[in-house]
Length: 280
Length: 276
Image 1 (cartoon, chains in turn brown, green):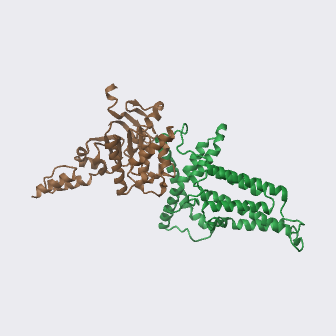
Image 2 (cartoon, rainbow over the protein chains, first blue to last red):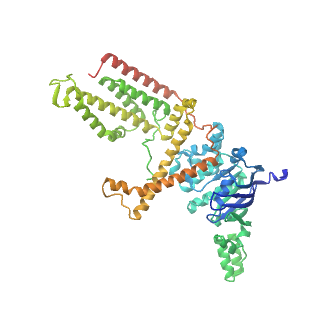
């Protein structure tokens, strides 16, 4: 590993395999780099191993084979807690990741765990809650919030550790469309404005549109890599991995099949222009 | 189900609400000691007077406080009846025979009646004061208070912090599990389960199809929660605390009231003697 490589990759997985005991490997010979500051979408159908990937990257699970490095530092027992505070994970069910009844206490939990002093924890709560747009709910009871709000609190709880990387493990799967929108907005803003590296694990293909890069997982392996546009131009291949095209992809594909010469674009404006050009 | 505030916290911003939870716990203990030290009605009256002041300063409506007694109504009646029947004594408090009725081991005496009234009053005061604690203190700050009081036990390697965390997670999970119970119950009702009719045993039996999924999901939740806690760097040690409890002048006032109450009741005991 050269020194040049260090700042490049936030997460680097080399030939990683993992199994939960019997029944074969869940992750098999996986190679993945997540570049610093990028927004990566990991797509995959149920059971493709994408959630295991999140738990490996944060050291909740340790790989059976291969090596995982975070910012060039190999993830091992000795560096576990250091690296964990740099890689935050938001899980699927907001109800199962809240520790305290009151919003500010829950956001403080991570910061308390790493032994910060009170003033610093207070500042971190301010920062995290305003980053997710929940500053007005500081003293609210978590159980009274909506799903999207609860999940934003979960994100704030991770942000209070000021991580460099944030992994969202199906964090939108249990939310209604409005809640999903809220989360995606928060996450993409964090990526743009705070420079947080984001790994968005999802089975909603629509959500991958905002990403810089996407990978598709199937049966514990990465089967497709590229920009979202590249991946969605291979719609038939996606289908074989039980994933569909996003709505815009389906529309432009149908139009092409119907004989209209529109390009393969994921931009609604652009598609509308092309349709207008074809019609006139 | 969402609107249910578990526990019986009554939100207000009163003198009593703003007391340190440790002071309130200490006050409750002192109050219990006082009503057991009191061995005459004057002592109990003194305790009751203190309690009335506490209620007045808490801005919790009197009727709401009194409703806490409903829960122990039958216990109080039962305790009273037992004591009337079994307590024997020759003392007379008013004109008439000392013993009204005697049959085997049962007897109704003047002393028995007075003694049971005394016990029931004690019980009522006990319940009223404890419910004042829960009316004016959120479960969260009560947990903080208990953690802080137990801190010295760390010296004997007692996992105080873990215990406090378990308590606060349990509190936090109550609404979630209540929602889940309602959901499972609805799902089972939709499948034809009947929770409303049949005798007691049948009804308990009908709850098994609710309890089992509820337990299973609670275990799954625990599993996921522990992952989420670990992901947020929880290691069970070297933690700091964001919220620090602080005593204020209010707690000093409460402490003085408490000390005066104990002293007063003790004096009444020494100078007036047993039940008058």
